[in-house]
Length: 366
Image 1 (tube, rainbow, N blue to C red):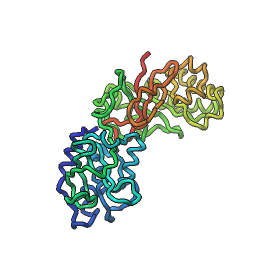
Image 2: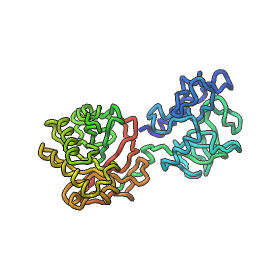
Image 3: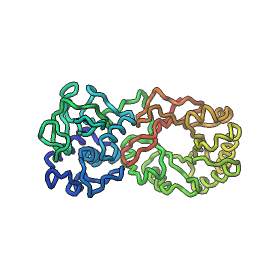
Image 4: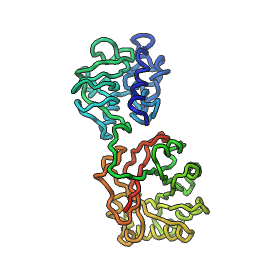
């Protein structure tokens, strides 16, 4: 995770870069700097378009390409911050925030953006902006400049810098759970970021191993991280549950680790509490016979509505409960369960060494 200073230094290093030819909004020249393809699919590298928003993404992408949304649309970026609970009203801005402006009377919510470097007053800032000019309040120029803004600011987006994260009240032990979506993980950086345990997907719905399982396990062992695995439940019969268990057992062989049976698929709900209990017990029984300890993973809704009292009394639980689900731990939304050992507190976590969002967890001590 970059620091605010790193982001601002990177933006500052681009001041003075201009379009070529002048006044072209040409993506061809800027392709070497800011004209990267965007998720929207348009514009392409051959198009001409205002590039203030792509400049903002480019600055952050030098450290973490997922820290802000990859888009050429200021409106899309502003909405992304809003959707993720990271929108800041004027007067509460801080250095490192992404400022959004509206300079005309069309129906667009915002049409220009930049990165705040100095807060001078209530809505008085200096910001590094791409595709701007020296003239007044122009939002479509041809250069990266440091601009002083006191008007037309509608609000700010706040990236999840470590400096702005609320420190939890407890000394938690932090972990992550991963699958192939996280790709190749740099476990040196993960460990340096304070992660102590990893729960990795074992087998997929097909029964084939997660393609990154062996690498994840090898790295955890080499880096001294605690580890376990999970199996997402699809089984709707006892026999199918035992087959799921056998797939995990064959994958692990003699490598002993806790196994978590992941109960959250909506297609199991029609089985009812008794039917779900039978599925879980068939899976656990097969694993225990092979010498493995098994716990139950589920979200709070599943625990409250579909898990039997017998299971609640007998087995350990890993419970997912997110609250705003904005990447931070929110202590107003702790899970409530018997025999709980871990809390998955977000699906939108960020950890150094992982290029995507990742589920983040903490151990619960009784």
